[in-house]
Amino acid sequence: MSTAAFSEPQLYKRLKLLGEGSFGKAFLVESLKDHLFYVIKQMDLTRMSEAEKKEMIREAKILEALIHPNIICFREVYRTKKGKLCIVMDYAEGGDLAKKITEMQRKNALFSESQILDWFTQICLALKHVHDRKILHRDLKNQNIFITKDNTIKLGDFGIARILSNTREKAKTMVGTPYYLSPEIIENKPYNFSSDIWSLGVVLYELCTLKPPFNAENLKYLALKIIKGIYNPIPAQYSKDMRKLIEVLLKKDVNQRPTVNEILSINSRF
Image 1 (cartoon, one colour):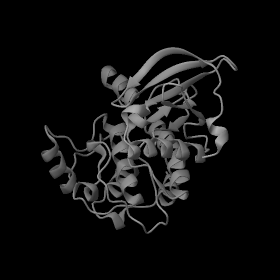
Image 2: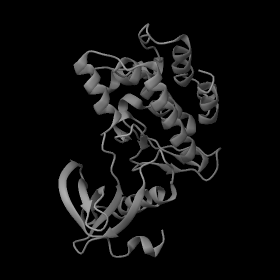
Image 3: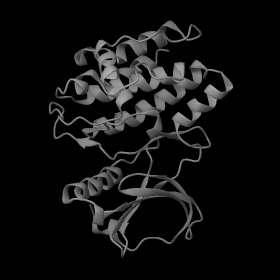
Image 4: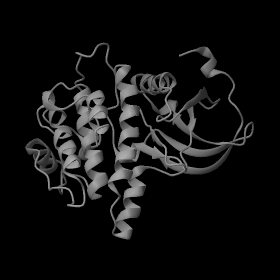
């Protein structure tokens, strides 16, 4: 990462806490320079091991390298005098897709197929940009897919993204959110870009049904369901093409899943 990224930060006015985890917090802030809203992800380096510190710096490097209209834009990174690492990112006013799903559940309504395909295409364009740079997202889920007030998708949270030195290399650590985990990760097998494609299938299914394809009371039974790969059909209002798209994304055999480029080609024929 360039030293410029660690230069003196802009001044920000903290507006509200957006969320917090074991090592840090995310705040909505207003820049006193341009009066735009941003998100500051603040991590407490003093509570982290050296390996965890490296992971946080690596996330900032990944964000810095990913410049795309459908990816949350990295602005700067700096350290505070109290030893906190702050990553400044653009703010998506519309929240995330998980919030949109919850809103539709409350209304007892479903998204239109055209709306789903619009969002899905934008997610794929973001994922293409990531995969083209030999990066695995590894935690693709509706909570990490944000939306702006003009309905633009912004893929975010690359906290556990992994850069592959070449397309044949396979990652080996078990990471990700349980509902979105691929069978190969559950079975502790090496995995590659196809695991992100599986998670993409779970995201698409959830947009159609407002619930994940695989659900269970505990992790053990959830794992068994994912490995079996059996899920309920999507509602009848959706087209046969939509059904086929979900089916091909959720193929248990990694070699039968399409690449993101192939998915974009399929989408253009809808």
